[in-house]
Image 1 (cartoon, helix red, strand yellow):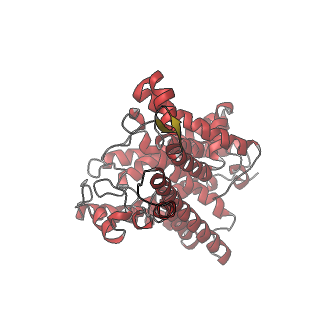
Image 2 (cartoon, rainbow, N blue to C red):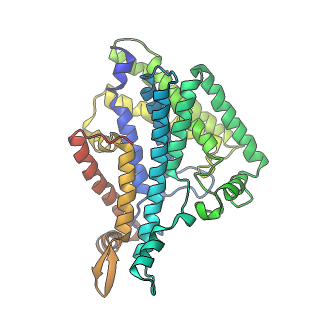
Image 3 (cartoon, rainbow, N blue to C red):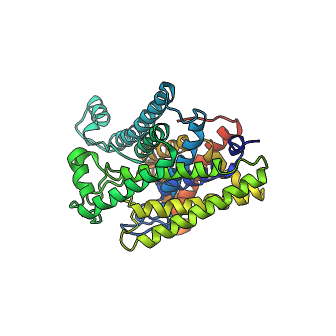
Amino acid sequence: MNSTKMNKRILALDILRGVTIAGMIMVNNPGTWAHIYAPLRHAEWNGLTPTDLVFPFFMFIMGISTYISLKKYNFEFSHAAAMKILRRTIVIFLIGLAIGWFSRFCSYWASSHEGLSFGENLWASVWTFDRMRILGVMQRLALCYGATSIIALTMKHKHIPYLIATLLIGYFVLLMCGNGFAYNETNILSIVDRAVLTPAHMYKDNGIDPEGLLSTIPAIAHVLLGFCVGRLMLDGNKSEDRASFLNSQLITLFLVGVILTFAGFLLSYGCPINKKIWSPTFVLTTCGLASSFLALLIWIIDVKGYKKWSMFFEAFGVNPLFMYVLGGVLGILFGTISFPWADGSISIHGFLYKILLMPVFGETGGSLAYALLFIAINWCIGYQLYKRKIYIKI
């Protein structure tokens, strides 16, 4: 059995995807943003929290998955491959825009607008394109997937590490020359985003859009790093013995993880680890930790065979982007669909948090309990798809 066939049986890849998607959904849906359980908070600026790991972990595993998916083309550029990549990039980007539009539509529609007719209110809810955010999580995934795939099909793989180094070093120079570590509108990232996207179409955070234009450069390097790790994993050992193959993967992933993590923390003295600007040290550290975590999962699941606990995350991992979109849509609906309560009305979100959970667990505990309940609701849907072997590719 060759390594191409064996990688399909590495359950840890799906589990890591599932862990990151579940984490992304959970941190996006607390009971209240005013009282978030500490590990579920993002770092305010420089630094790293457990929450800051989930998105870069997913991008790292996306790089490995891209290597696996492009292997069937023998990494040769063709019209069919290019069109598939282009279509998927556009679809993922448009889904990200659609989620943003749907959020604004529901938010505006649910709010009170006295003096407007039904038609005027509907039109005002629909036409929010003048203030809709252009970039976001799904859009970043789309751009990084598209760029990585095209690079993988058009560049010799032995040269990709040099490209990664060029992107990260070039981006660091840009940050140093453009006040890139300032948490305000003098930051070069903010200046470019405000000039190109305009403030109306940006995330509002001291002028910094965490998925902005220039910070997409190191994000592409991030996915390329995952691609290179996938190449090392799956092409480094041609043994037909599965145990030897898995042991080779463990050694590769562990070494890569230690080297990248150490380099990231060491270099952070001159280049702070920062998710909002996706600093080069953030790329190195999170890719290193993701590599080490994947090695741990392979050892637990594929080597030792402890798989029963992982079914929860597998339901997320086999349909990752669909589950993320589902979580986003349900979060919007829970926050805007209201029903009569007491002397007024209350949203589904408000009822679950304020009426059911907060009185029992308190403000912070109730906020965490709501996030866990929300994950459980998503899992119930994902598990039904998983059980019926329904795989929704986005």
